[in-house]
Length: 121
Image (cartoon, rainbow, N blue to C red; front, side, top):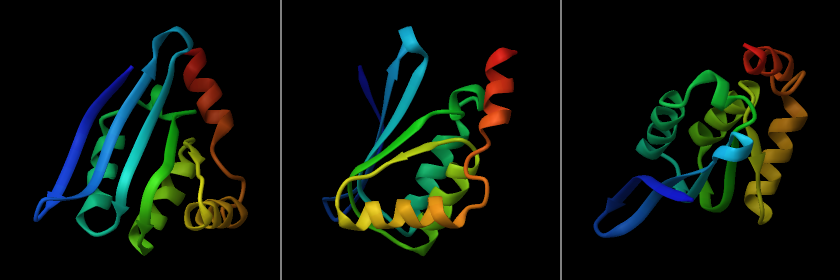
């Protein structure tokens, strides 16, 4: 099931849409992004992420298939979310390249051990 949570426009043009998809049976959460992850919309993703409980953040997926542009601040936020346990799903040259760079440059990758401990509580 899909629930639109944030949609920002500038002069009628869609800039960033964040849709939460939850599957209760398997306790999974996916944030589907569409548009540009740049400028003020980076903070929108950060705010949406902070509304999610730490248990749900661990193993949550951020689907970047619909993202058309990521600026330096968007990339930094994705790296931080990766370190906090988010899975980054990318398609297309731009997003795949950025995700691969984040995975390669972030020592230790996501905090899986801490995520596993949170889920046991």
